[in-house]
Length: 430
Image 1: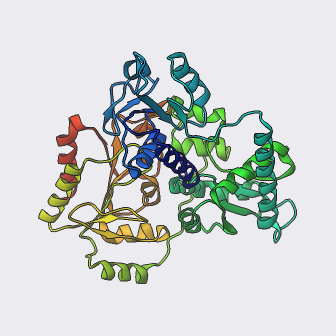
Image 2: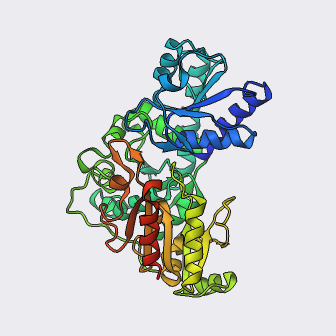
Image 3: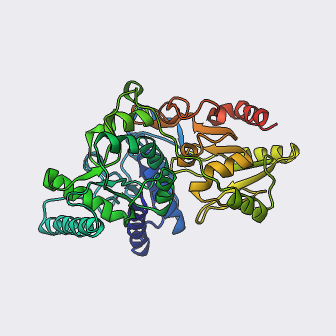
């Protein structure tokens, strides 16, 4: 869920709170997914929490998610209770989910609240969708006006920095094969722009989140009239996304095969090495940390998975016992792990910063892709119970399986193997 969608969800939940719809209710989240994590955060901002989480996926039922055990809808919602209030965000399946709940006796806008944008056949919706395409056309002309006629516009519509890194590995080879010399590269965050700059990608425009969607909608409605190329392995509603994880189709292969149309003979082109020694020296002086003896913790990601506080505390204490300095990579409103100070480094300097620091311990996120070529000791932690479409988080996002590095220590974590995971982490951090 990007910032635009989170803002819309937050407004919807604020409205429910103001109308006293949430008070004294048994709040149930439908869907063991990252969407539910964002919904829960918005609820907690208003002083509410969820009492249960449900899912129709048999693989998820019984596992822990957001501090709750996932149940089937029948287990959590039957027999019928007026006190149950079901909240979810699901762009693709909200109709089916709503119909299932209605069959159980629950009613829309009383017990059922789908927070996502819902498309229907009303005049209002027709007007809205027309306006989005007009807005997409306006921005298309705005960012291409100084370029050659029929200049291709590449759009990376997600805020994921790992997506941009994967795109960068193949982008210049694609330009060469397609004989493209003039282009526009559109992203939806400054962080994504920083990653694109690592690969010497030119003509980068940072678009408002919704504008990227509008331009893709324009291209879909007009066919090939506009050379708008979506750089994603399965955009909204695209059936291609359901191939993720099938028969070994991991994150890298989805971009390789389906975004760029390359076979396995096309090599990665890593970002060129830069000399940021002056900037890195300044950062190490600013944060009062020592090169080669700094452990950068990265506990935040957009997935459902967070390391428990006691695990993080154990890692921090072990680092200090070994004469290492643990710090937490923080951006925006993120807070450092207890016992550590916050550090921030620009993403285009991340490889050089980690080379100098020496150690990295992080939950799998886009930052792991970016620093995959760093010479530091890398410990990447995956949710052992995490599922991603047709496979696990580890099988889909493993840096080794993607061919991004061979030296990372990759660990699948769950509470039942906590001690073994901690032992492996501590052995690496000696």
